[in-house]
Length: 110
Length: 112
Image (cartoon, rainbow over all chains, first blue to last red; front, side, top):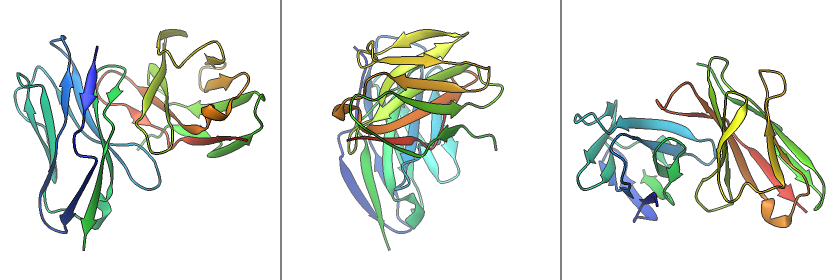
């Protein structure tokens, strides 16, 4: 069975600091995609970053980057220079039809 | 930037009533999805739709649920006889490939 685990239900970070959200997954497939989605209080689902499993290079989008460890089935999200607008739930998701983790609630403290 | 549009943003319905949630995916997207999120819980896959038919569905998507793409633009989710436990946020998503889904802003369904 495909599972996605986010072991940090809540995290906080000081504004301008760096925070890392962890995600692990379980699959027997070799080619797949991984995603981080942000869900602010408005409850929209906003794509933050995506990673293709066959690419060894970690994806980066401005202040957001991932540490993808395929052998360890780990896909963590690093947010640099945290901003107040980063406060949201963050969901890690795997695969074609999306298996989501349970989310990490991130609060950026002024 | 193209958007996935969902209407209504909030729907209140009586238990046992039928409800239709509407979505307009991005026009050149080929794959369409419905997800739900019960308040405070994770996002759960309901169904995927491609080439005018269901390609996959989860255990949640039982006979009470159906999807339709009636006119090549709208993508609807129908719940035939709503139950209290159907209260949730329902998200539509679309994609052209596996390269990242675009989600709509959701419909909050409240069954009373």
